[in-house]
Image (cartoon, rainbow, N blue to C red; front, side, top):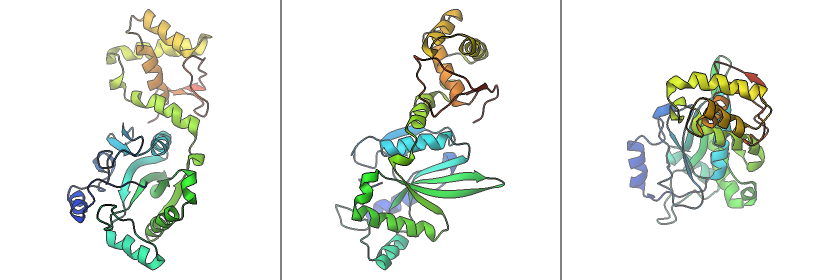
Length: 273
């Protein structure tokens, strides 16, 4: 991500390190950069992770879309965003050997720590592997300067035998990302507009209505709310929860349109996180 933190001094980098930025895993990981560290140059997002149970800091719409697809993947077990390429001396050495100018602060012209957008932990059979991914709009790859900075990243990860790659908008399934974005806030049942003790009854009735009633999801959810005397919108939030937790299996590569009939491929009472 071509972003420049507000705190660009060497002292700022040491402070980040001392504050454990770029360290930890899972819920304990702290990204090197947060949305507050980077001047607003477009959309940025703070999203509570399904897998990590912490707030993720995404610095562009493309990063957010890719993040959603990682959340959905059963192979992905951990997502670390804005991962620092430390030590700084290593990327400086790579840049020098390659004859490339290192990333510098626009204010001080001093070298600053580079980051990779995502370091991802993937389950592979009996073990795990890590892959690094940089997110870039395809048109930016035409820039010589962009390619130079990417080469520094590539060399950094190659030295660690970690698979590194570039992801553009062409590699991100747009429909899948949009579906997960719609479902995402309702993964955890505690965020439903519903007392927990009523959830089983809503699940049962809602599932029956979706399976056997020939009408759209919004109408079915409204009917369920009325039959069970629930606040408007309660059953629709439960429907989103059931899809997010894979208790309802649907074709995620087709747009989920609440005003259209929802087709269930299968019902999995336990679900899969």
